[in-house]
Amino acid sequence: MIIYILQSTVLLAISYTIYLLFLKKSKHFVFTRYFLLATLVLSLVSPLVKIDIEPNQAQTSVAPATVVAIEVVDAKPNQATASKKYMRDFLSRKRTV
Image 1 (cartoon, rainbow, N blue to C red):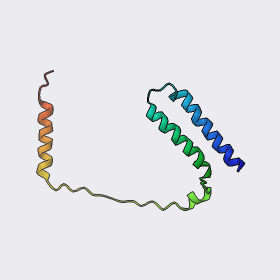
Image 2: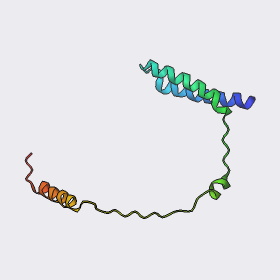
Image 3: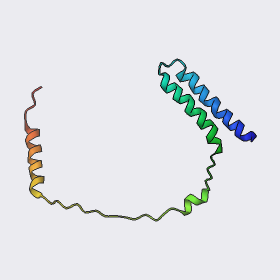
Image 4: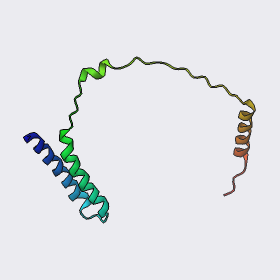
């Protein structure tokens, strides 16, 4: 119980410091209100969340790499040549600025 209170107090102190440094003189009152409410809720809930990460678990659960080859087939060859011709004509025009 003492650890929960200490973690919650530290999180509240961090959020209050952020409020003092960045949001105290802010004219966005709605955002400031939601920030204070959200940090209050997060500081009370986040010490209850436990995340266990085992260092060997990440190494053993890696799947072997799979190589996938994708072949692109040009279904409309005339369209490709038309777009090349359009680009060539576009680039050869004189630019007047």
